[in-house]
Image 1 (cartoon, rainbow, N blue to C red):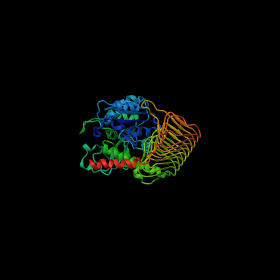
Image 2: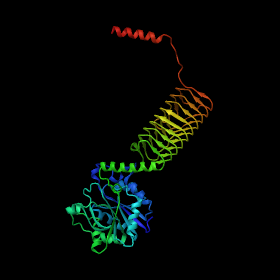
Image 3: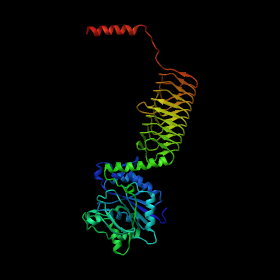
Image 4: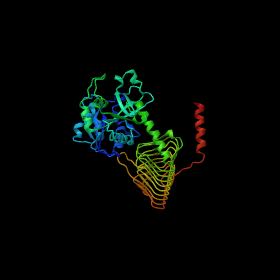
Length: 449
C-alpha cells in the first residue's frame, strides 16, 4: 500500500472516433466489464483518498456510469493532456498528497505498477515526477523518453522528435505520478508551442528539469500499458487479459484442455480440480466449485455450480441457475433462475426456468417448465427423488411432490402429490390394417395422377 495519501485522476475526455461507436470508448468492455471500471477497481485496491474522472465528449455516458461513487470533472474544450489534468485541480481543493494520472483507455495497468510509481515518487532523491515507460515491438508514433539510469533527460512527443530521438525505443505510456503541490505549479507553466497546438502533460518533466529538478522513469511490459483506440486494439487487449486469466486459473489448480478456447469474465470464480473442456464461455457472475467438469460448448453466466457437478456438453446456465453438489446438467439443457438439487439430473434437451428441483430428482429428456404466460413468470417445484418422464411439459405454477412420477409425454397443469403417478396424455387408439389400406389408396392415386 502507498505510504502517503494519493489521489487518482483518470483521463477519459477523448472522443474515441476510431472506435466508430455510439458507446463511449472507455465503456467498451474487456471480459464483460467496461475498461474504465477495470481501471477504477484496480485503483480502489490501493485505497486512494479520492478518484476523479475527467470527461469531455460523450460525458453523459461516463457520468452515468461512475457516479455517485466517483467524482467527475469536465474538460471543455479538449486542449491536451496537461489541460485535462488541470481540470481536476479545483475538485481536489487543498489535497496535499500524491497524484497518480491514469488513462481510461489503458485498462490493464496493475496495482503493483501503480504502487511502484508512488513509491519511486517518495524515494530519497525526491523526483519531481515519475513517468511510466515501455518498449513496444513497434514504437510507432509514441512519445519518446530519453533517460540515463532511470533519470529522465528529455521527453518529447513523436511529432516534435528528431530522427535521432525517434530511434529511441523507450516510449511514454502517458501515466505519471507527482506530488500535488509540484504538479499544479508545473501545469500552470505548460505551453502549447508544438506541432499539435496542445498542452502536453509530459512537458511538466522538462519544466521541472529547467528548474534543476530531475524526474524518474520506471519500465513495464508493453501489454500492461496497451491502449485502446480501435476495435482491433480492443480485441488485442481482451486477448491479453484472457491469456493471463487462463494462466492464473491453471496455476490455481484447474485443467483447461484447450486454454485458448475458454473465455472468462472479469469475475469468474473457478475452484480446484475443475476440468474445463474446449469452447466454454463464462459470462459475468459465474461461480464454479471444486471437482466440477464442464464439457464442451457450454455457456455459463450468473450461475453457481457446486462441488462435483457435471455440466454439458452444449449446456446453457443463465443468471440465477444453481447446480447442486454432484448434480448433472447434460446435452442441450438450459437453466434460468432454477435450482437443481444435490445429485439431481437433467441429462438431455430440457428447459428449466423458475424451478426448484429437489435432491436426486430425475428430469427426463425433452422436459420443459412452462414458466411464462406472456405476462408473468410462475414457479415449478419438483420434490426430492421425483421422476419426470420424457417430453413432459410442467405448466406453472405447479408442484410435483417428493418421490412422485410424471408419465412420459404428460402436460401437467395440476399438482402431483408425493409418491403419486401423474399422467396427462390422450388415449391411444389402434386401428388394425389402417396403415396398409392408406398406402394402397395413396399409391393408386399417385399412379393415376
